[in-house]
Length: 158
Image (cartoon, rainbow, N blue to C red; front, top):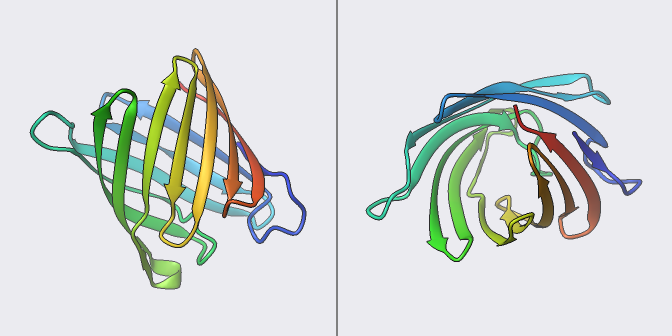
């Protein structure tokens, strides 16, 4: 679940998602935005696992969130790699057909404690800093959408 805390944001104020992991390389589910009664499929398939010779490679589909430039689904091709000391990064190419929009999202993650991580998420136009608390199968994140709008995200893995 994601909840934008500031009033007047151009984002969907609430979003729910249900995603299930199937094996090591595939996950699938749905995202729902109640204000606009929109449903989006979510899936991600890891084609290659990262190792010392090459980064991970994955394809997927989800809502175009956190982009504020378009709505609807986005398809992505993503490469990701760990760099050591809890630092990893990713680079994607995404296409949102509803807005005929191509973007190049990217991000860097830092797991600085067993229970804490941070992420700088670039959606191709705006930077969204994130800090996350991890506990067993659930996590709680504080995001600043566009670096401005505080947003809470709560996830449970299953």
